[in-house]
Image (cartoon, rainbow, N blue to C red; front, side, top):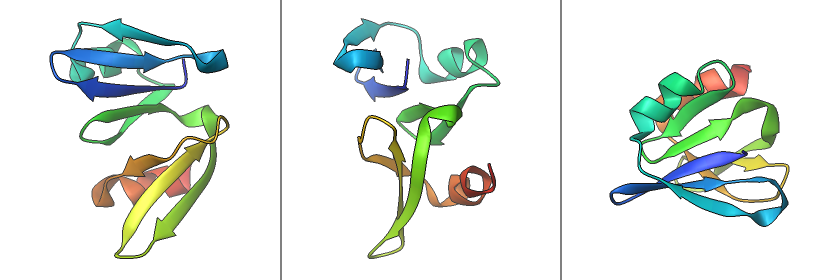
Amino acid sequence: MIYVVGAGNYRELFLSYGRKELHDKSLDKLEQLLSGSFEQVHKSYLLKISEIKEVTVESGSKYAAEPKDGTHIPIGRTEYKDIKAK
């Protein structure tokens, strides 16, 4: 698994090789279950820290992470410093 996105009552789990699965646990519960390797980087996103290829600052003081699969994942302002340090 590379990252998780909140999608209404479900969470979308983005897996290796472009696969996607739906799950019904909350982001908070998934973060507890995946603690250590995943971190909540935005209110709707969990990201596997070891998958981060690059962290960027975009115009308007917006932050983003790019996992190895090339996806654009937003990073909250309060999480940016922690993510950048890792």
